[in-house]
Each structure stands twice: as structure tokens, then as C-alpha cells.
Length: 127
View 1 (cartoon, one colour):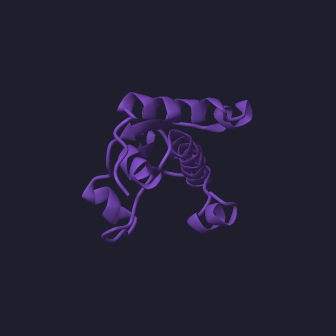
View 2: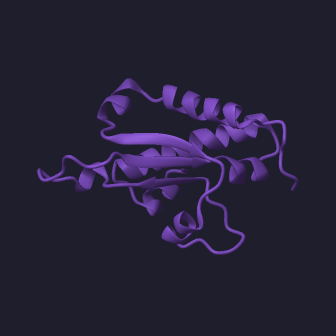
């Protein structure tokens, strides 16, 4: 499938921002010490951190300490990071609307990790 060239990085950042804006206020209030960023592609180290092989796509990545694992000793640490990767999504989804839906799903998936959900739990929920 050819890569879409009509979706700009700024468009994609807007899709991520819109996905975050749709979160319920209760969820936004519970998110703690986490930054959401956009990158064009995952690095090789990021791909390896989740055990991806050649040809496997990575749409998003949560790096940090999930809320369920934080103890009273948690503090003075850099924010957790959720990174949403543009080009793997753009390559696999043919329309702006399909990309927007996948961004929403990926943002929710990575936020689920921030809240301590496992990969299996998130996949069972359809994320």
C-alpha cells in the first residue's frame, strides 16, 4: 500500500490532540505525570523494547511507571511518555478518517497502559 502524502505532520498532531480532547474529564483528571508526543517513526530501540520484528508496525508506545505500580517512593521522576507514531499508521490506513479512528484507538490503548492495563486486557477490550 503506498504511503499517503496528503496527511501532514501537523494534521496528524491535530488528530492526536482531538483524541485527547475526547477523553472524559474523569480520565483526564486521573492521568498523572504523563506526556503525550507524536513522532514520525519509532526508533529501533523502541521497536526492540516491545519485541517487534521486521515488517511489524508500532502505532504507539507507553514508557513509564503505570499508576497501579507507583508507590509512596514515586516522585521527582521524569514524566511517563506516550508516543504516537505517524507513518506506520498513515501507511496502513487509506483515508484520513481511517487514520483518525486508528489514532483514537491507539491513544486509548496507550492510556490504558498508563492506568496499568496489560496488552492482553487492552486487546480483549478491542484496543
